[in-house]
Length: 296
Image (cartoon, rainbow, N blue to C red; front, side, top):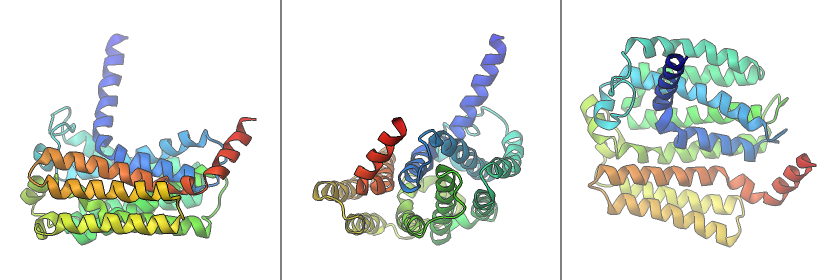
């Protein structure tokens, strides 16, 4: 019995390590966005959101890490393949098995969620197997489009029974995707060595002189826009803009250390999560009223 538990624990840890780096980037922001943007039927829908988002995230990560496993030797040696927890064959097979499994899972929530899953699977193939991640323009656009699929599916799941997105929610997804498309290359500063080895043309490689200053300007611009769009209270608006300045300031001040870029990317993800929580901060009284109504 202990042997069985050891095997289960080992493979569970392996799956976690495949997705570890995207928990802050995808799982948490998408879950926060779904809970704050959709007419959440019940708070236990959060478990459904995570149960749908994580397998799709695993599908994307398996694709990414099996196409160019040599990249992670330099960038993320803790991942299963560079750390030799398993051979390349098994995760490659699982990568393709995850597509029908994710579609089957999505079918539990309706045809619109299945559509989100199918489009996401197609975008993942374009990004990794077709090599569009090699150019910073297509990489950022596909990242943003993939996030839109995650958010669309999770919002539909959050509001069980929703057949379509409300116009306001669709606008929020578009804004969220635009924010992601114009700032997600913060992740590329820490990966310069691996990306250079693979011949990728990410923004920090193509435009090293101004990439950090450009993304700082973009973070600040989006923060100012979102503060106005959501009509945030002054204290919250100042915090949002100030935090963007902190992230951008780190990127500019600590430009020679991979470890510093790792931390800057961490704080960027905190900013992204905060941005995804803005609908709740905008409508906080209504959110509290709805939650208290469910608890009665």
